[in-house]
Length: 350
Image (cartoon, rainbow, N blue to C red):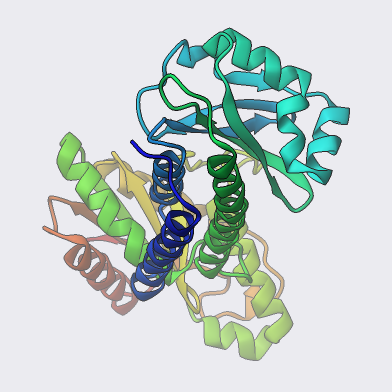
């Protein structure tokens, strides 16, 4: 393979940016998480081509100063399990100031010796927000080191890769924030639309049931009127904290698991996804939640139509009550409506 020219480098850079923008556009249109592994693979593939066809390698920070192999563009010669290194605080500070200093860092040289023998590599640190987040390596083409022009091109592209990966991380954080309800810190309706389908697919694949609780604070508008908006907002926060609890609440007769997923559906409505939970188990958990809320002393609760703050809960289970995500949510919603029509403060099954 002939060494790439500077023109090849600019053309590859243009294609890299185009591929990156396509990924961002797809995520924005469908409002799904950015597939960072796809971005990593795109960047490594470009570096590999521009490095004479030799494998490109990405190491990411596993903890402070420790880096491990994340992905490579092809088979890595030598000992891939040795592709890990630990850098001191001084070395990290040095790289944060100049990412191209990586080749002179002792921890990096030791890793290359251990993994590749004396093989030459192109190397550059990835720096994000003043911290070293990873390491890019491009191994030497077979039987020859990188030419000066190759090294120059790799320098150009790797700097752009650093920017793209940093942008990808920042975009992923924004997507995550957009799927969180800022009042309760629970996931929101947008997240439910995405996650419920994934959980249905997972339940189908493994042959497990998936249950869903649809909860509503009874007579919430009445509580707003009598207790005031500030107290009503606090009630929503307290409900969110209750659904996020994992056994921290004293004397609570119920406990959600780490795998259970609480979501604020909107207003005074909440949804809890219960993976690998049959209807009987979901009913028990819903009833214990209802009793706990009923027995809680909430400011202004004595002025509620039922004499205290209460919740009504509808329960539905896949595949017993529904064949897909939309019908599962609808089945739980109908059960919730039935609970409210029959007097509120109760649990009803689809």
